Length: 284
Image 1 (spheres, rainbow, N blue to C red):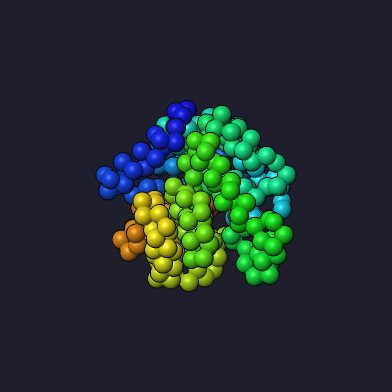
Image 2: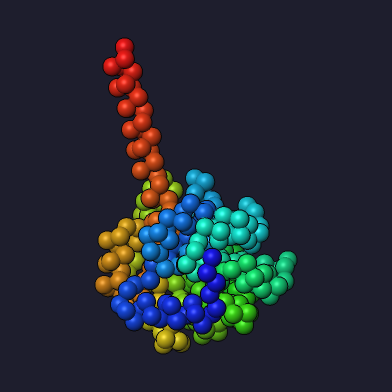
């Protein structure tokens, strides 16, 4: 696979934007998905623990639960499945930067060594709110660990991608970590077998996305902005987001991986069954 320095990766994204080509980024659960995403001219491939759960039939939010070691999962997925199949596309890692049981700098160095070009703060405590989030922050398990991890990632030569879910966290993330790419996470993607039933609609998704983009630009005017989640589930949705926000591209999960498989796989299975039944009728 082609390896990218931090400077090469950033230059590649900037060139894409300057050429008026929105960036397409998506998660890949395995080598087959990564291989055909690359053949479809994807710009960035991400490896997340949520991809594993999503493509095994569970909701993406399983990646936020204590169901396994997120960092061990993405390292194995990346080194054994995704990276060997990708030839020319930057691959980034979704890292639990709040993992207090490991040396984050050492782990980030290992990601560089095997060929990852960037780091994204997922799983993230930014998804939690209320008493639980408050208690995490007060007991030293909060968002600050991810901010510090993103700073270290940049020092180690990785391009940094930052998630936030509200304007307060967006301000903190961009101001303190100075991430290269900011992604507003509007919520779990709608549709299919494990998507949310009501995302609030495209109007709400666009409104919240742009509001957070404005905050991000305030603290880093040259930041790369990507949209993600909620009602953004289909190509036309992506087009609408690009037209109606300052998004320079989109990050996708279920919208490419899961929704591309569910109905087509069911339909193809049914087609084989129907064709064989017709064959049996003719023979008899």
